[in-house]
View (tube, rainbow, N blue to C red):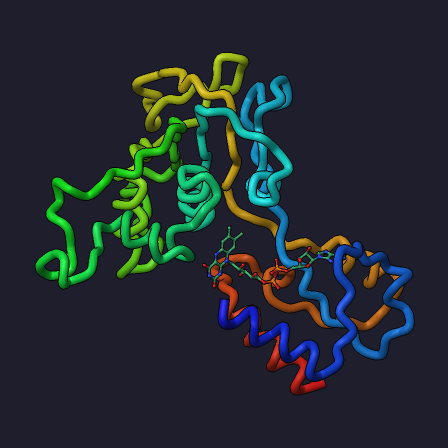
Length: 252
Ligand SMILES: Cc1cc2nc3c(=O)[nH]c(=O)nc-3n(C[C@H](O)[C@H](O)[C@H](O)COP(=O)(O)OP(=O)(O)OC[C@H]3O[C@@H](n4cnc5c(N)ncnc54)[C@H](O)[C@@H]3O)c2cc1C
C-alpha cells in the first residue's frame, strides 16, 4: 500500500505521462527512441481431456479481475503462490485479512493484551472462519503443499487454508473434466480414481511471458529492451521486476 502511494506520487512529481486502460499496438511504438517492454505474463494453458466441452474452466486472471462468477464448489489446479493466493481470495469472499486489521486479529485470535493474557485468545475461543464454499487445492507434485512458498511463511498459508476447510491434495493426476466435475487419480498407478463434484475449475498452473509485441517489434526491426515477466517468468517477484526496470532505465 505504502509502495503504491509512493509510485503514484512519483508519477505526479516527475510528470510522467501515464496512459491507462489502453492496449498498445506496434503502430503506437514507432515514434520512440527507446522502448522498454514490461508486458508481464499470461496464464499458462493446460490441456485436460474434456475441458473444452464445459463452460466452467477459468484462468486465474479472469477470476482476479472479477470477470467470472464462481459457483460454490471449486477446484483450483496448481498449488504454487498463485494457487494459494486464489484459495485465500475466494475463501475470504475477496477481502484479504492481511489488509484489514480487524479481520486479521479475528482470524488469528489476537486481542488486546489488557483483555486476554498474552494478547491471544485460547484456541477453543478462536472463531473458525470457515468458508461457505467447498474448495479443493490440487497439485501434481507428490509433496507437501506450500513446500516451495517462503521458508518462514509457507506454513502460515497452509494453516490459514486448513482453518477454512480447504481440501489440499498432492500427487494428483487430472484425468478428465466433464459435466459432473473433475475426474482425478493419484500417482503413476492412477490410484483412487474419483470425481470431485465441482461447478468451477480455476487453472493456476503457471505463466508464460507475454511477448506478442516483441515478435512484432522484431519483424519491424524496432530496437527494444525486455524486462521482468516478459523476459523470465520463473521466481519473479515485484521487487526484482522493479529492480530490473530501474537498472535498465538508469543505463539508457
Ligand atoms: C496472484 C498474484 C500474486 C502475486 N503476489 C505477489 C506478492 O505477494 N509479492 C511479490 O513480490 N510478487 C507477487 N506476484 C508477482 C508480481 O506481481 C510479478 O512478479 C510482477 O508484477 C511482475 O512485473 P511485470 O512488470 O513483469 O508484469 P506486470 O506487473 O504483470 O505488468 C505487466 C503489465 O503490462 C500490461 N500489458 C501487457 N501487454 C500490454 C499491451 N499490449 N498494451 C498495454 N499494456 C500491456 C499488462 O496489462 C500489465 O498491466 C504476484 C503475482 C500474481 C499473479
